[in-house]
Structure formats: C-alpha cells, structure tokens
Image (cartoon, rainbow, N blue to C red; front, side, top):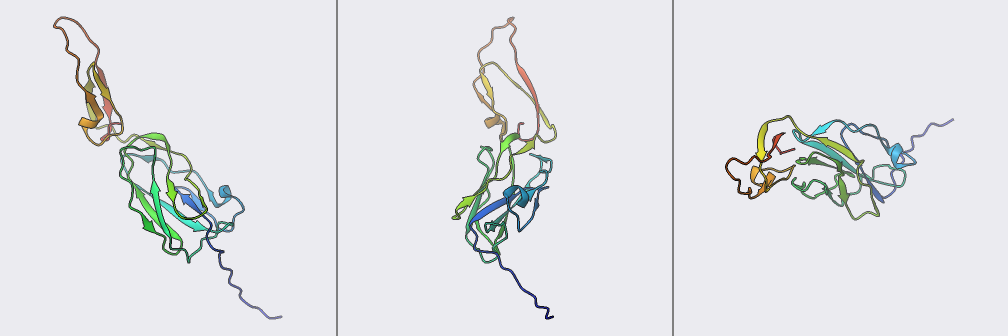
Length: 178
C-alpha cells in the first residue's frame, strides 16, 4: 500500500456567487442553495456591510487563478454610492456597501465577464435609529432614503389662508430620511 496526496484544482470559473453577511459559502456543492446558505444578518442604514463575491466553477469551487474585473451594484437603492469596480484576487473580491434607502428589495448585482452572474439573495435593510423630526406641508413631497433634507422634502408649500386649517405630515426618521 502506497499513500499519495492528490491535489484537486477548481475548473476554470464560469459563474460568480455573492455571499452576504450571515451567509455561509460551501465549495464542492451541487446547487447554488448548497453553495450559499444561511440567513442574512440584520442590516440597517446606520452601518456599512461587506459582501464577498467569488468566481467559481460549475461545482462552486473557487477558481484561485481567476483575476477578471467585477463590479457590485445595488440597483434598488437610488441614493447610495456604488463601490468602485475591482479585480478578483485569487478568485475572491469583497465590496463595502453603504445603504441609504431602507428597503426589502435591495439586491447586490455583480457584473463580470463570466457566463452566469448570480445576484445575491434578496435582503432587508432596516431604517437606522430615529434622529430627526420634520413636517411636510401641503404641496411638498417626502422622498425617503436621501442624504440631504433638500432631497428628502421637495416641492413648494401651497399658500395657506389665515384661519383655515390644513393638514401637515410629521415624520420621525433616521439620518437618511427613512
């Protein structure tokens, strides 16, 4: 009997997977749900979070020789700043996401030159801690998930008559107007 060590290499990358905080990546999987499992951590607009993107073969093994370009976008968050494009390093790249809009439809969408780009799982970004109170008058429009008051409340207040009551909406929001 002769014992011999055999090293198995990943095949060339043909797809990418996105791993969110709280999720677990497992190589040598048969399906995407086996490769990326777990429950996404609680996220809010108060904190940035990191997303890991991996270039993998058909069995979700990381291709450590892959160094192509990758970009991560958050298409449902209209007010955030997208992270800069980067190249994979040993088949892996991380991005910092800085959410502005509290939303349940936020998806990290990686863009690469590979055949299949798997979006992240859908996840919830919750509003941050309440930090401001303001009123929206008739004629004004409230736009949540903004970085400035001028963007959050737009329009011109309607003229009001003395002695005539009118309704105003009062909001308690986080620092990003959620």
